Length: 264
Length: 304
Image 1 (cartoon, rainbow over the protein chains, first blue to last red):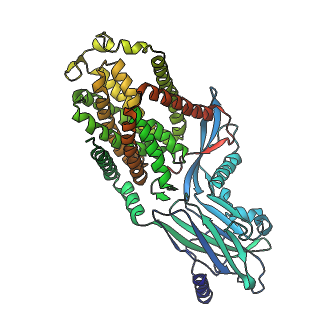
Image 2 (spheres, one colour; image 1 turned 120 degrees about the vertical axis):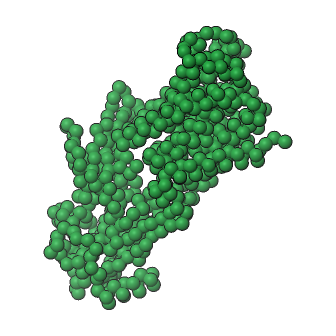
C-alpha cells in the first residue's frame, strides 16, 4: 500500500504521462492522473494468477463524474462454433470467425456502467468486450450475428477471462473499484492463471453526465521468467530441438526405471 | 501447484503424479501401454485436448523404452518385423499429425477424438470382458485355439515375401506396413501407443508367436511415439515439457510396481476388470455425444 501511495504521489506531482496509443475520440484529453501498482507481472513455475491494481485521482475539483477502469488483454482471432445434431450425435458445426476479440477484458466501476455512460459511448470507447469483437466470416444461413457475439462473451466470462465489477471489493471478492475521499480511486482486477501471457493495457476513463471527459492508458507487461521462459522460447523458436529433448527425457526416464527396478 | 508453460494452466503436481502412477500401475499389471487411459484422464482434468494428446505420446515413449530394455534381455523382439511396422508407422503418423493440425484448425478435433475413443474403448473393453468371461467359464475363446495353426490367410498370399526368423514366418511385407500405417495414424490423432490394437493384429492377422509380440509391438510404439513428439512439437507446439516430465515419472514407476503385482494375479481376471472399466469410460464419451448440450456454442481453436 505504501508503494501505491508513493507512486500515486509521483503521478499527482508529475502529471499524467503521454498516452501510448490513439483511441477513438481524439478530442478527449488524455490527462487523467492514474498509475498501476504492478507494471510488470512475471510468470514463473509457481504462477497461479495475480492481481492488478490501478489507482488514480479524479481531476474534477468537486469530485463530479464517475471513474471507469478497463483492463484489456491483446486482441486475438477467435472462433465460435454452434453445436448441431447430426445422425443423433452432437457435433460442432458452422464455425464463425472473429478477426479479433480481446483475450482478456475486465471493466470496473462503482455503479452500473449503463448509469454512467450512454450505450453509444459504451460501444464507441469499447467498454464492453462485444464492442471489440470484429466478425471476420459470414454468419451461416439463419444464424444471428449477435447470438455468436453473445456466445463468445458468455463462454469467455465462464472461463474468467471477461469480468464485470460494478462496485468495490466485498465479502470474499477482492476485485472491484473503490472511490475514496478527495477523488482518490483504486481498482483491483483478478487476473486468472488461464489469461494469456502478453501485453495488457489499463484504461481509465472519467465520465460526467454520460460524456467522456478525460482518460489515461497505461501498459502492463505480463511475461514468463526463469524455466517457464526457457521452455516456452525453446518450444516456439527451436521446436525440433524441443521435441528431441522431450524424447531424450522420455528415454532417460524409461531407462532409469528399468535399471532402478531390475530384478536381482 | 505448478504452472504448465505450454498448456498455460496451473495443475496440482501430486494429482498428476497420482493419476499417471495409477495409469502406469494398471498398464504394467495388464501389459498394455496405458496411453488410451492417460489421454482421456488428462482431458477430464481440464488439460486442453491437443496438449493432452501430444504430451501423452512422450509418456508412452518412456514406458515402452522401459519395456524394451526388459524384453531385449529375453531376446523377445523381432527387429525385422518391428522395423517394417515402424516404416509403415512413420508414414502413418506423419499423415496423422497433418490431419491433427487440420482438424485443430477446423475446430473438429475434440469431436473426432471423442468418437474414436468411444469406438475403441467400448470395442477393446468388450473383447477383454468376453475373453475373461470365456476363461472363467472354463472354455478358452475360439480365436485362441486357432492361434498357432499354420492357417493360410490373405496375408500369406500377397507378393514381396520376406523371412522373419525370430517369428518363424515367411510372409509378405505389405500387411506389416499397412498395420504400421494404421497404428501410426491413430497414435498421432488420439495420443495412444496403439499396443492394445497392435498386439491382437500381430497375433490374429500376422500369426506371430505370442512370446515376441509384446517386445516387437513396444519397439514400434517407441519409434512412433518418439516421432510424434517431435512432429507435434514442430507442427502444433502442443507438447508440454513440464507435464511430460510429471507423466513420465508417475507412469514408469507405476508400471514397474504394476508389473510386480500383476505377476501374482490371474491375467485373465485383471483384463476382465480393465475391460469393464474401459466400457464404463466409453459411456461417458457416449453420454457427451448424444445428450443435448446445455450450451449450444463452443469456443474454437482461436488460441491453439
